[in-house]
Length: 115
Length: 112
Image (tube, rainbow over all chains, first blue to last red; front, side, top):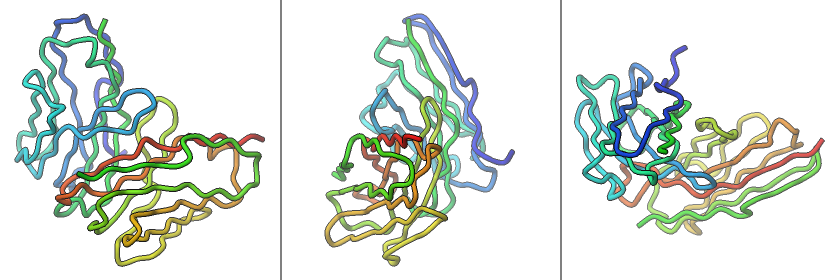
């Protein structure tokens, strides 16, 4: 399967714990995006990478959130000191090209539940 | 700031009907727009990417049009089937052309 993969698919954690999600993009794609989606809403942009460089972060990405894409391949999104409001679906997407010019392909998402 | 609306929010139709889903955006200086489908609890599946140089893009029973001047895109679904039941989302680029802004989606239910 050469699509975008995400791990884990589901994560249940207690408030205050740290969690880390992984995204493996389509191998030749230089752009990688993270989004958050809550029930009944469209995805909201969090951050994106051009190769290994993180080029933009949304104001939604508080200082408890950090993302990396070492070597321009897979990416991780870490949430520290989780809060109940962090409960959402976290989606990863990848594309090829400059700017928002390429077709985006999404992974299956990681559903986070914070108790 | 790019803002996206989709009308209707929800739609329920009998099988076989032809449908039009509408997407409006505020910043018309875009070079493409993408339509997605999302099944409950799943990720997004790309349906069509329409470039600003194109007026229409077709894939099977789906046809998307883009009118930059009016800030609108429509997704036409011909001969709807129960398997088309899903949420449909449109996403133009943001004001800087670096990432995508999603609408809230249209939740479609096609009844057998």
